[in-house]
Each structure stands twice: as structure tokens, then as C-alpha cells.
Amino acid sequence: MLIYWIWLALKADISEQEKLAVLAHFGSPEDVYFAQEQAYSALEALRPEAVAALCDKKLEEAEKILGLCTRKKIRVLTWHDDLYPSRLKNIADPPLVLYYKGRLPDFDREPMIGVVGTREASAYGLSVARNMGEEIARCGGIVVSGMAAGIDAMATEGALIAEKPAVGVLGCGADRVYPTSNRRLYMKMEQAGCLLTEYPPGTPPYKWNFPRRNRIISGIFCGVLVIEAPEKSGALITARQALEQGRDVYVVPGNIGVTTCAGSNALLRDGAGAVFSGWDVVSEYAHLYPDKIQKIAALTEPSLKSDTKAVDNMQQTAYIDEEDSLSDLNQDERAILAYMRSGEQNIDELIAASGLDTGTVLAALTLLEVKGKVVTLPGRRVALC
Image (cartoon, rainbow, N blue to C red):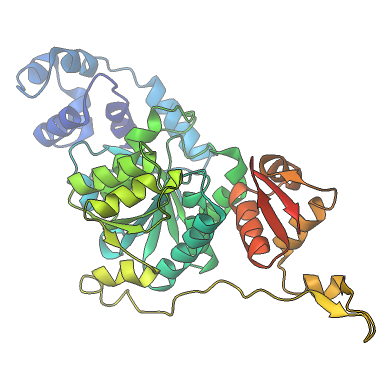
């Protein structure tokens, strides 16, 4: 029964290795639960603290969590389930239980590709992340990210634009949205992707959850693509864990001397593979998933379009034909321009005022800058051209 899985997974004083040891010894979480102290003490793999924790048979917290899962439509994936990722089972400390919302992919039969990077990405980095996410998805890969603002969100958006599933691994409960600016992206993922976490519903996004979360991200993908990662960043933690777990690491080369690219460029120096398209990444796994992977042409940035017309032959004064200037913009881009008519805007204030999620606003601003409609200013500010 699920309640015994949750009971065992909740034991904070027992390491993941100890939980797996008692599960292997007794065969099922029910048998672990009904065992006596003498049986626990006989296991050399268990510390005294772990034995004491197992002797606590209270089920109230597990019952509460199971009730939350039912009410919030959160499903539980256990170690014994067929869809539990086999790659994740092979890391040093895999979680006994995973909670998820959305559609769970078959991790072992799909080319899972991690995409990570900084939250404070440049407009270029955000554009590359979205293109890479879309290309990876169209080539047959499934994008895996930490659902953070910036690179993670944009790569996930790209995969969803391709109408392909994606996986977001959370550092909080599956019923919590973090950051809150990604609310719309979370809603999309519940419908077309999968939100996955080891933390039970109701768990806040404590800062110490995220480094631990990264081992799950690296534990389920075949390889990871790093786009704009500064030194000492969470993205580099994921990349290092990937290397320790025998996974492949790829990097989009960044500008020399730019802080947000220092960590990712260092990975290149240390031997990570340089890539320039989603196909460069996915093609590495074509021999493993020949029926899943296909090559597509790399996406390109939209070309700049002129918004000026001659008024007459006597004067070369240009004017903006408003209808023409908006004809190549999508709904989100038009909405952002409408909020910017009052003048220069702080990006965070623009996100709050628009009601759109961070990924959507940053994507719109990136394309608006490419199309010559806005310009990025210092201090996370933007203005109309």
C-alpha cells in the first residue's frame, strides 16, 4: 500500500541507502513497517538512529500526505513501479518515492535531455535556450529542467512550443509554484508535460532543497546541455553530478569575459562537448533510440523588418505605420508593447503588471529586441526603440 511507501520515505533520520537496504531485506514497505526492533537491529547496514526511526509506527503524516495527493491530483511513483527510471536507481542516493503531476514519460525508452543554465540570462541566452528546447523536442528528445526562471523556463517553453512533452524536476511539492512568475508555465506542464519531485505536497521551496533536487535531474537524463552558467551556480552542480553519474555534458559556447558564461565556458575548457543546435545533442543518442530520433533543420532567429515608409518624394521623413509594425508580432509581444507605452520599464515590474509568467515575458522581449521594437538597458530595464 502507498501509505507504507510514504511512511518509509518520510523518515528523515534514515538515509536513502538505509531505506533501500531495509526494503531489499524485508521485500516490501509493509513488511518493513510490521517488523520488530530486533529484526531492524540485526541489520548491519542500519545505524542506531535509523533503528529508532523505524520503531516509530505513526502513520498520521503519511495519511495526511496521501490525502493531499488525492485532493490535488498528485500521483505517487515508487521504487517498485515499472516506470521508475532505471538510470535514477543507479545513483548513490535515489529517492524511494516520487510525486508527480501531468503525464509521466517512459524514462527508459525516451532520450531524456537536460537543459540548465542561469536565472539571470542574457537576451541571447534566453533566445538560444528556447530554440534549443524546441529543436531537441522536434528531434525526438524530451527536455528535462529544474523549472527555474531564465534558461530552464525558456528551454521548457521551447519544448512545449514544439507540442512535445517535457519534465520539470522541482525543489518543492508538486502543488507549489516556484517561482510564482512561472505559474502559466506550470499550468502548461500539468497539461502537456510532467512535474516531478521527491518532496511531498505542501513542501515549501526551501533553498536547501534545490542542490539536492539536482541529483534527480542528472539522474534521469542521458546528457545535459548547459547554456550560460556562471561559476558556483546550480547549473554547474547539475553538470558535475552528471559527470559523476557517467552522463554526457554539452555546452553552448558563451562570450569570453561575460560572468554568466564563465562556468559553462570552463566546462568547455575541461572537455565538455561544444554544440550549436539541438540536433548536435540529440544525435549522440540516435543509436540508442533509432525509432525516436529524427533530424530537423536548426531554427533561425526571425529577420528584422523595416517599419518605416517614405511619406513623399520631397522629404525622406519616415513614419511608423502602426498596423504594419504589429503584423509580425504574436499576442504576447503585442501585450508587452501595450504595457510599455508609458515609457521605460523595469523587467520585473513589467512581468508583474502584465500578469504573464516570467518565461513568456522574457521570450517576448527577446523577440521584440530582435525585431527592433525594444532595447535592453542596464539594471534589468527595457525601453521602446
